[in-house]
Image 1 (cartoon, rainbow, N blue to C red):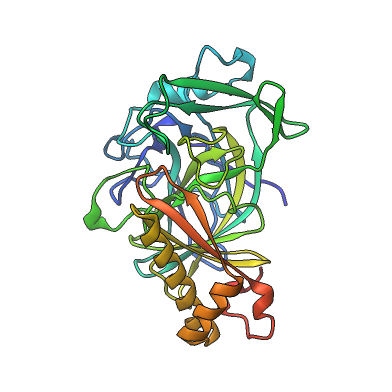
Image 2: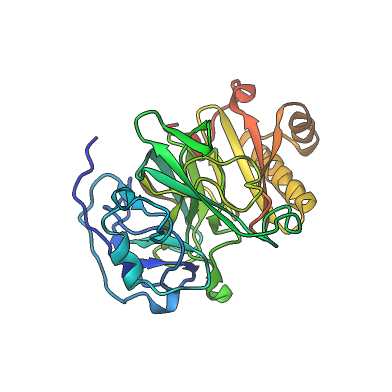
Amino acid sequence: MGYGRKKRLRGREAHSAWAHRVWPAGRQKAGPTVTWAAVRPGGGGSASSASTVRRKRVVAEPPEFVAVTTISAKPNDKVPPDWLPPEIHDIFKKCKKGPGPHILAGPIAIRGAKPGDVLQVDILDIRLAQRYGYNTTRPLAGLLPMHVKASQLTIIPIDLETGLAEVVPGINVPTRPFFGHLGVAPPPEWGQMDSRPPYKFGGNLDNKELLPGTRLYLPVWNDGALFSVGDGHGAQGDGEVNQTAIETGLHGRLRLTIRRDFKIDMPFAVAPDWLMTMAFNESLDNASREALLGMIELLGTHYGIGFDDAYRLCSIVADLRVTQVVNGNRGIHTVFPRAILAGKREPVFLDGI
């Protein structure tokens, strides 16, 4: 599948806040597959706030998917000039800092999307876009805030042919790229929000399992859904313990579809091998309970399994995993193997996967 027709968004269409007031950077009709074209800016560092994004409509012809390229981090003298994406200076020159540290590409408004709908995000492809990434360690940040004595920015070379990243001299780590940010605009009454904490609209999920071949479902809270993506990660461990991964630029292809045949109030994901519920809370204990209850509810609603049986199944076959512990709202996801449910009729949200 080719990349179809594309439209680029310049730095002024990037944003670093979640808000229902962010003017759509692109609009797309709803249908069996709702898609849009290429988005150019993205990554970490300064960005325009939701209130200062230029109010300009960019209307795309409807290809088959969204093609995005995100950029991570503003130019730094530690990075060889020939490693820098050519557009990075223009993006950071035009962007203004908002209430969050991430640059998000979008938002993309999907024509016909209404509050109460579900946005289906099929992750078709993710590829590395830069020859480097970065990782930062700072005092008073991360899981060990009192143990770090001084800030440190580490530029990490990435071999685009082998996919290896030299994280520590002489130690190469295989990359496994994914988008840390995938979300829609929050409920209007919440106003403008920092890009760091994940919530029920998605956002800074930092879930390393959202790879090509997986599907994310997000509840829609506003007309048009207002979907944004960014915060490319080359690799990340469960927890993201020092508050950053290999922060880098990525190319991606996503298919966006509006669903009205089931309802949700929290993000969840599916893959050929598993079902995943997510929860975010300042307390890992509370997040664990919410993610587990989400899976028990999913098994009850869509597979007809009662609470006691679902609870027993989860204790025996499900895995509770730490998503991240550094974004304010800590994340837990419950992973349930689909093979266990092979004798059951599959729910509608598993069509095509």
